[in-house]
Picture 1 (cartoon, one colour):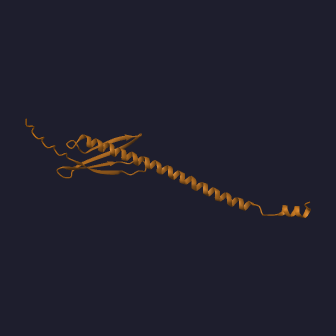
Picture 2 (cartoon, helix red, strand yellow; picture 1 turned 30 degrees about the horizontal axis):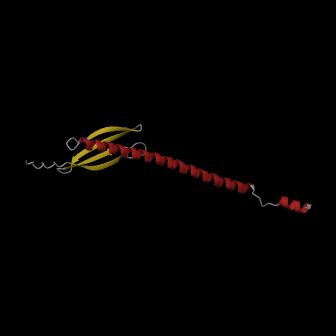
Picture 3 (tube, rainbow, N blue to C red; picture 1 turned 60 degrees about the vertical axis):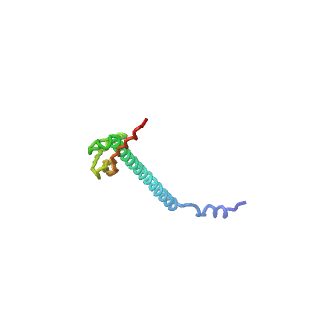
Length: 138
């Protein structure tokens, strides 16, 4: 049987959590949760910026394909606006003669939101004429 003294010693034992310890634990928990939520917001912002950058690259690729499909003789400088996924991207195309057979194509795509403008450069080569076929002799 448990005596009165043993019961009183058990009730007077102060080995449990007190108010100060609980407040410290809650403070540490709140700081951790705030840090995690801040990381979540930062990663969402970076994902949005990455999406805009990929759209910029897509716009530049579309414009470059248009310039290449038009061919050597019709490659000219121009300014245009391309809409992708509801965002308008102003585009400036500069075509300059690099040599007699090479033109330098510079495509500047303006940014959206927090994204800066990006410049892409490539070369457009003048095709060489095909050689005349050999005459057919009977």
